Image 1 (cartoon, rainbow, N blue to C red):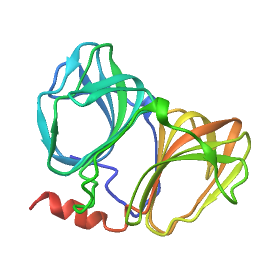
Image 2: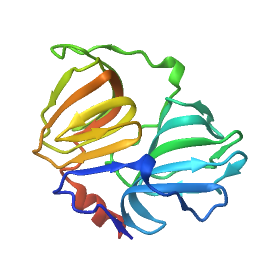
Image 3: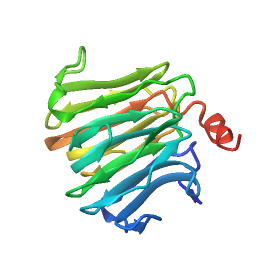
Length: 229
């Protein structure tokens, strides 16, 4: 399966408008943002767990990163309410489920093989702080490895945001709105910019909160080739 696989192009997906697609596990549905592969895939996805649904025990051969958007995601490592951020590195194993249902934003097979950090940041522990030389922006660092930087950012109302992008950028709107290249991005809208194409955006009249990752798309061809090894 191939979804938005031309990484040289700008891509916007308004995921809240996309249909849910059933996964192999009952009660677990998906909205695919980008994907290279079938059930073993380099993938970026919105995943919805119905109440009392679960996924069978599995190992993440390429690593897994996710942000809880709604509800509470659980596995044998704990319960993670909305706003929590988790990274399970290559070779890690777990059995996910949700008692009351949840929605998560998930990325698979996008880890540097040398990055073996387990990251489990529960929402209540996250604290935003002002960003130096970026007026109207506060942020929470989530993870850094090599050139890859992952963070949450809050943009005040009507704040212009300029971010250089030498090695690729992705952004998911969590709340509020922003405008970028004539597109209005609302909650669960996803933007991917290729390396070298900077972000020029403006927060909406109520501001916005975004998940953002930079520095991770320069070697995307090597990531995809590594899946076949």
